[in-house]
Length: 153
Image (tube, rainbow, N blue to C red; front, side, top):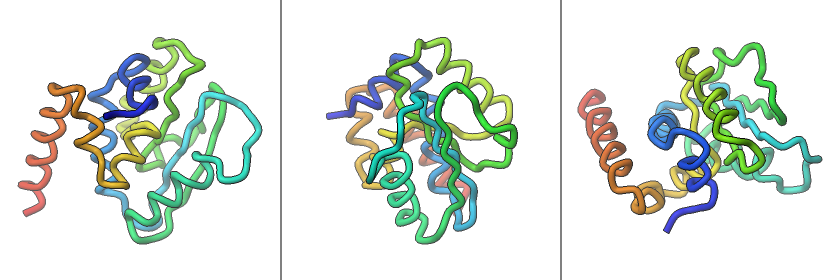
């Protein structure tokens, strides 16, 4: 079982980079800056996933307030490097080149990037389950997670 957002992450972007970005959620601390980036420029609605639900789940996960910036369309903020995490939509309206370009920019600035589906799965304790259709990626996650846990002990 996985999600449409994660399937788009695999099709449009680099699934492994998104997995590595998801690991950064465990490093978030209250007060950290998180950019929630959406490719579309639609008008926000009540209980919007990028302005309400994802921020709520991340706040609950880190047990504290985070500083959220939300952006839509093709641009990213000039102060991208000041964010500890970028949470991106699936990019359903974009082509692969556009998503990879955005991911490359995050990588150049050493800002972890993940996507909506992976963020939701992580904060709700379902991350390994949603990666199960992708055994190689799941194994990469497990190895990186184990390495990170060893470094913290």
